[in-house]
Each structure stands twice: as C-alpha cells, then as structure tokens.
Length: 201
Image 1 (cartoon, rainbow, N blue to C red):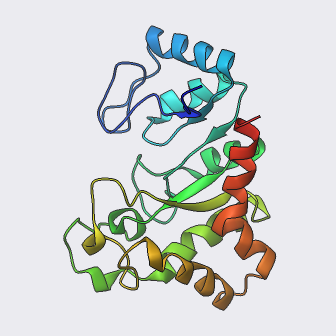
Image 2: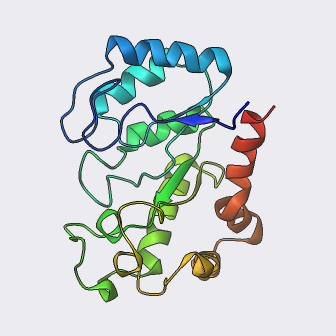
C-alpha cells in the first residue's frame, strides 16, 4: 500500500538475508523467510549485489518477478558483481530484465572510480546491451539501470553523460550500432514498463 514493489535481499557487503558479492555465502534463514513474504505480497526480486550462491538459491526458490536492476555482463567486465552468461540466460528464461549500470567501473575492465572519465564512452554501454541481446536472441530483457542515485556521480559515468538528461544519447548510440526503433524503445523504457505494470497489478 505504501509503494514497495521490488526488494534486493543484499547490498554491497551486507549479510543479514543473503550473501552479497563481496563475501559470497548463500541465503540465510531470514533470507528464505523474506522471499516467502515477498512471494505472498507479489513483490519483485532484485538480484543485483547477490553472490553467485545467493543468486542460484533465490532463483530456485522464488516464483515471482526477477530482475537485476543495475548489473552488467561479466563476460565484458570480470568480477562477481557482474552477471555470468548463465545468470543472464536464467533471467531471460524467467522473462526478467537486466538494467545496465552506468558506473564506469562496471563498464570498462579494471577501471577505478575517479579514473579519467574520457576512457569510457557510450559504446561501452551499448556493448553491454549488445552482449545481452546477442546472448538471449532479442531485446526484451535488457534496459538502462543507471544507478545514478548510487555512490558515484557525473565524474564516474561515460564521457558523453553529465546528468540523467543525457540518457537519451544511449538510444541514439544504439541506432548507430544498427538497432531498430522497436529495439531501442525496449531498451530505453518499454522493458521496465512491462515489469512495473506486472508488479502494479
């Protein structure tokens, strides 16, 4: 009734409900209870920040909507904070959506926060989108996750972006990569709208 629709059981290095990516580990008893309560209320499960083990346990246990609101492909940027191709496939099989995080450290291998902004461009974002589209065979499971309200600012996003007002440039870059108008619309908002409409029933 107060608007809660999506829950991530872990963040960064928290371990109350689930193991986060920094330390590994699986769901705790409280985590399983949380999933049961979420299922009861029809909430969505966000698997961003979950360790590999917690991810697998959550996907196996949870029957509702599953997304990764701000996670990128590990095949392009190594590290457990990113999603493996198998995890991406699992999310696709569940009709989930993966939101591409715009933090430069998630877009360029070995990039550090505060490092030169000009080293990362919109092409790095579109490469993430393209990897997921190619892996899953369509554009129905990837979107923009941004995380611009997270722990980084304009100095740690791709060169062409200064604020949320510039996000439309990603759609133009997708077009330059050969994506048609329907695919661009999916990535730039329609996929998230599909998820949110399902959660707001």
